[in-house]
Image (cartoon, rainbow, N blue to C red; front, side):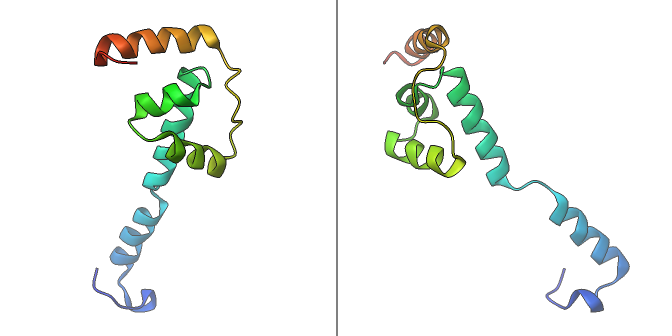
Length: 93
């Protein structure tokens, strides 16, 4: 759509723009993905950062922004399982 006021846009253009504005943003997907990976890692942020391929400091900032608990007292059995799977698939950890 050309840059012009919404009042001057046709009804079809306004409908198309409204549809685009209602779509979820990439940030919403990233937040949900981070939450899921952290949960699968049993709350172990060091493991989650390795799985995600991001630095721990970056993940800690993300956790702070999402207001997630920072303790690693989650499901240790799950974290151990993920750690073993991650090590087998990547050859490290």
